Length: 299
Image 1 (cartoon, rainbow, N blue to C red):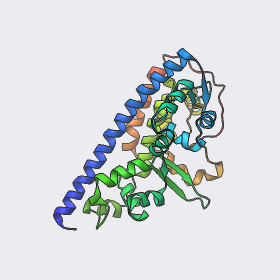
Image 2 (tube, rainbow, N blue to C red):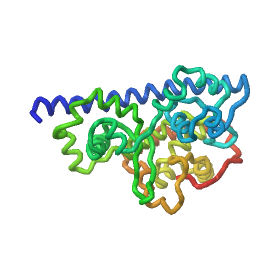
Image 3 (tube, rainbow, N blue to C red):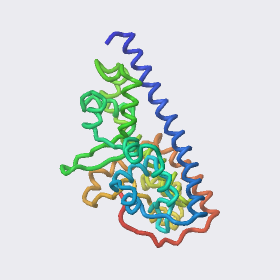
């Protein structure tokens, strides 16, 4: 790759990361407003169903609707059990009336692993992994395969957009900036997944206590103890801890995914700590919830 092409690709990568962050923030604000509107409608009109029941009524597989909910494509409301979402009847009606339903919804919320994603982009899986490690796009989900190997999943539509807008990064030698980052062991996937997942959970939180629990979920225990010195409050946040990986993994897999769940870098942890303190200040003005919730272990 010539110097001019490398410079162009480097600028493209930086611009792409900036655009991705901006798009994520915009999507978060939009989804928050949409969820608030649907919540008000559901309360006014009454009636919502569990996500699995909603999938049956819409003719979708549960995993398809779960992905759509996670991406903010389907608005939901809270239930009596923390983090257990329900779909209002009014949202089911809206989805059925959308042009191209259900194919359009499936396309917008399709999640793919690295192999399938690389095929969509016309590149090798290794190339996709290098781009993801450099932070060119963010995983939305993480799973373990039957070999206990971590599998990242991405939004297919986002990969297609990246391929269309950043063709210089799809072939030839990677830019020097990326080469140095990869040689130094950079892997932005866990950090960007944590950011995306906590943003999703904060959108779904129905109380300040739940928002605080979402931020607390990615902090190391000593850090959490420093920021939340009251043992009773820490116990409440622990009981309200959201499922970072959903559905939860078996306890014997904790050694594989444990490091993915925690913002151990002080620089990454700082904004979570700031938002935790702000959410706690608000939560302390509320009545502490009495938990009748499902208390299964949540990795």
